[in-house]
Image 1 (cartoon, rainbow, N blue to C red):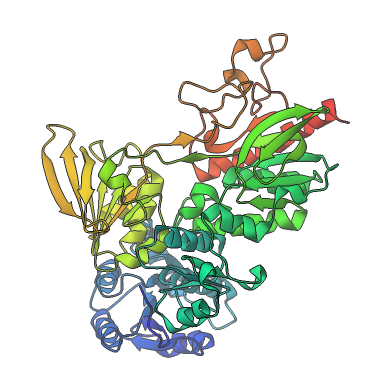
Image 2: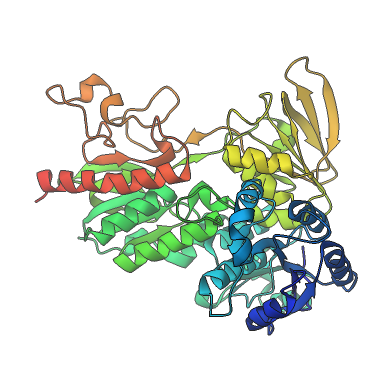
Length: 557
């Protein structure tokens, strides 16, 4: 999706308070066009006019009481006209008590994104914090123009080019992807020797000259260096393997308590949670927060306390030497007194050959947020019944004409949080196909259709699909671990009292999050019995630090 070059608009709807609100929103007038309408129908006319001129609506701000429509019905009309706009409802102070119960119900169904009291003209920064967060979310979602730090030159069908862009998006790095025939790309390519014109090509100020990465991990390593840059005699108090919510929480708490902390991540900081377009049930963020923003805030927190991050280098093993651990990577080894394994999980492969051949060409494992922008007016299919699948479907519905969620169960209620189920049921663009599975698909060079089979009678149906997002099951990242670390029958790490009795000492099991290798701990989704939720992973990451301290006090102090 390419946003208009004109200034985006903020549309305010209020029968009584337009003058006051236009004055209140005056601080945004430099970057946004401000419009005000007295009722729902005239707001529709304003939005149609903006659309006709090729403009975008970034934010819709409505009074909770309208003269010609219920506010929930009005927002449904406006969402049809402006599916990407963020939606805020305000209530004048005198109507607070009578309207809050109704608004609470609508907010739970995501009819709008935020509900606030009307500002009273006394620098209401709490109100404007919500407004700026919503505007920032809108700009991040639609790819609003930014001063790009990184330029990617890639063909539209290049799977690696898309993956590189998704990596940069997840890291919060401003970037722009251009096609090789664009004037800017032609100029750059012609300035290079012919042997250096391989696509995709990446240009960034910190790299010196453009280069052609062969993988996302190679690009990640360029940003953050190699583990062998660590002083050869340095032994960290803790090396944390994995920078998802669990690893990031462990990094923040370990380094804040004075432990020398290194965090190793194979790709983008944030892990699988970093791909979530909006997490609404994380404590302390009533308006929700994207996985990318949550990860980058946590990274900044950990950096402030002294954590050193190394990305692009997956761990390949753990061994013992000179009384401490060695975490091995292809970019060098890292010595540590303790290790926290927080490698999370990946989505299982579908195992359908014709689908696998189209990965990166309309088929994606995980919620590739940057791919959603290419689906405007198209048909998207999400396979999976967990929260990640629900969040992906909600995000895709802002761009695609239709989104189909395919699950093997009857529906979503057994596997997805209730708030997401309610949001999906309230969204007219999203449809759920229960008792079904993807068994085929194809297209001319990229995905155009998929075949669904009923799990009841194997009846087949071909449906159009411009994008297929596979979020099925969870496979742990444990194949690199030594045999001394016990796993359950599904390959997840056993800890504490769940470990085999042979690992217990004098009838006492390892510490709650400790593995069968003393001094090596496991947290988050990779641990057997974990809840597979962002908040619980972060809680385990924080909770492991006292256990690390106890081990260090017992063995190294």
